[in-house]
Amino acid sequence: MLNFEEILQTLSMIDNQKLDIRTITMGISLLDCMDSDGEKARQRIYDKIVEKAGHLVKVGEAIEKEFGVPIIHKRISVTPISLIAGASADKDYVKFAETLDKAGKAVGVNFIGGYSALVHKGYTKGDSILIKSIPEALATTDIVCSSVNVGSTKAGINMDAVRQMGEIIKETANKTAENDSIGCAKLVVFSNAVEDNPFMAGAFHGVGEPDCVINVGVSGPGVVKTALESCRGESFDVVASVIKKTAFQITRVGQLVASEAAKRLGVPFGIVDLSLAPTPAVGDSIARILEEIGIEHCGAPGTTAALAMLNDAVKKGGIMASSHVGGLSGAFIPVSEDEGMIEAARLGALSLEKLEAMTCVCSVGLDMIAIPGDTSAETVSGIIADEVAIGMVNSKTTAVRLIPAIGKGVGDEVNFGGLLGSAPVIRVNNYKCDELIKRGGRIPAPLHSLRN
Image (cartoon, rainbow, N blue to C red; front, side, top):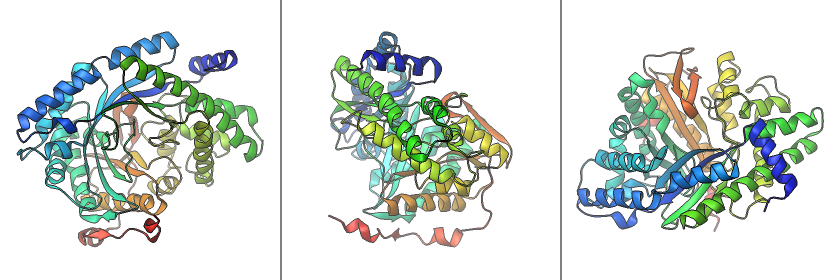
């Protein structure tokens, strides 16, 4: 339990440094909802979500009030729908997305993830149908999030899926063009996707997970930034130590909230994801942490080294605070959701190429990046391929969430509001990769994948 001194420090973090629990995410298995009759399967899905998550928001709000810890979002993740809908005779899965949307709204959550497919080694019938339906599904729903895993260290990269996802992202952008192509903000392409991720848009409930589980994602970039202000001019040994101690305290709060939520809901506690997740609010930025460490603006030389140290120190501090750390855990660098990153992109300090370099050491990947709306599907696929390759070779989770802003060019802005924020449209390399993407097939897994 927290001691008195830790309680006082935690209260200061909440009041002055924007410490919060970013999300309580309930994972729900839908494996027992399969049916050859799609209508029956959808009814079972709706009924199970409402039954399991009916008190999720109420419990979250009660804990928030009693403990004084802000809980920003309450969310649900479900078994990848390609597995569930694949058992039906349906030829289009948009109605499954609409069922998720309806159920999520009925219980009052902010997002529901799991309109997903795992195709890193190939497609099933369900995968093919689901992926083709993603643009329409995201255009006709409000809180449904989608993800597709196209590569892994063990399997290599499914380049047919990479090619298709470039096309799907462009189609999704066009179908939601009137809202700054917001559908793409709810769509993630993964390498090495994890089964217990509480963060959207990539959350889904893996088949190795319990029937129902509570996972919590903590945050607190502002807390780390404030802590580092006390050690300006000190060596990196001191900086790393301060970050570790701060991450420990943040994770303890997440562990407390997660355990309490699981107990009150009568379901197992899964993991605490100790990722530093920024918001567009001033004082809640990963970029500002990096600047505090010593760079003028995020993207300057030294940015990747500073981020590598930050990510490592956060994990080391968090792992000492909880025996159940999982998810993605580290530092997120979503451009539109981080006011310091937004400023750096506007100034031109942060380029797509520098962001890609940073993803080698951060928690996930190219996240919430607005690019010109006339960027070709092949170029989008090329960007995906590069990022997935980083994940495959480095045995880490990487992801791509690009927003081709239809009708907009470099320097224009997209604005989604809320946690999704806003971002300037940044330049994309104009040289083509069409012939590479047309090859298809599978990039083989790296040699170190053979470890067993």
